Image 1 (tube, rainbow, N blue to C red):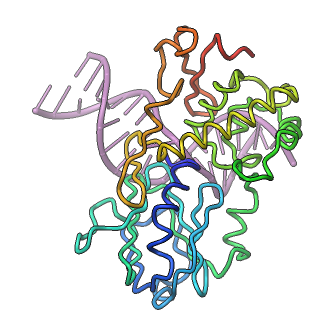
Image 2: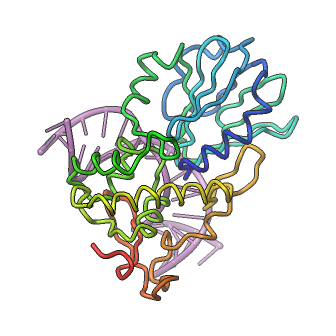
Length: 271
DNA sequence: AAAAGCCCCTGGATGC
DNA sequence: TGCATCCAGGGGCTTT
């Protein structure tokens, strides 16, 4: 679920309130994807300095150490109403003097990881292979084109892989390719320079529009204030199998690539 | 080194 | 209503 826009919306909705907070406890529920790393005890008394985002990871800088969060497929991170006990799908409570940040994650693909710093081997293992941030100045048409030249996989799979450009998940990969007019099955290396430039622009446009809409809520997603996103109301192809394309009325098609659903318009997205 | 598959887990929708 | 099946926004790990 949570792709770059959802993670970024979450970050923005919690950063002000959690920054400067003093951690009283980290209470864990059912096990998440990875073990915490250090002792939850070690977090007691630490102060939150900042919350950053790298790809789909939230990086919470502490006065000593770093807390990494991942929302997986079904996770959301939000302040719990005062006094409300954790439910069956609440698996981590960061209790602070400025409120309790609660990770709600029914499928438990999410993670909370405590490391000494970003250069900790455990952190590096997860962060080192990540691609460029699509909304940063380091994401350029030339760089994208050069990276695509090295890949023979279908462009949709390359976008999803996250080692070239981060944060583009299953919804936004389909949406970006639609906006760029590129067929998801096209081998990445066959994308010309001008089309790579269009794709570059499309990725930025789609992610920015999603950010402006507060992300997409298909089922579980909520921001740090418990609010849903609305970008799902603007999708052109994702989840619209058989419905007419907004542009040309051709029925939208659903295929499977790498065990994930892909949606596209066979008319608007030629090869 | 890149690419393809497998798997983690739970709940909701659909179909019989 | 009950049960089986399929599907889901991610991504690390293993194998080829």
